[in-house]
Length: 200
Image 1 (cartoon, rainbow, N blue to C red):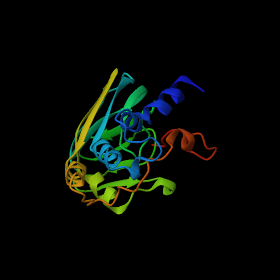
Image 2 (image 1 turned 90 degrees about the vertical axis):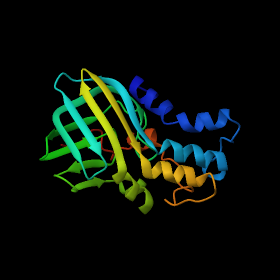
Image 3 (image 1 turned 180 degrees about the vertical axis):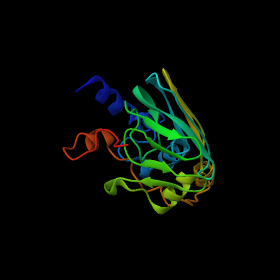
Image 4 (image 1 turned 135 degrees about the vertical axis):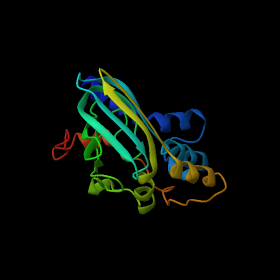
């Protein structure tokens, strides 16, 4: 197994590992109250650090209503977390765009995020691990910054997922995702038919 695959494999287990260390049970996080809260909290964040190419890519997002991105960059290596539906610890992150006109992003696994101006952002999910309707709706409310230029720094926060996390403390599941087990991305990405890199 290559170093990047090994890192991706372990990074995708970060939240389950923390839950296990807290004595929440390792078998299935979705069956434990605290395990579900850990998954909900993880869904609030999209963050990574790593090394990128020399051509800059910068993206500012304030939900899907306002996205400005420009440049063209692919990471050499990135380590982070993009929520339970996207590969954690992927070595591949790619972004390209012309400000206010069009941009596309990819974080190692679906979705491919395409923006064609204000209020026009779409996502292409892998049909085998397509999120529940609530999560697809929440995906529209990330806000944050991504800078890839030699170094890769990406930090986004989702207020709708955070609301789901807070209400989950009191037993509510507004996004209907408490029963969703995180996909085994390392295994998925090693399938013969899996997309290894974005076609942009």
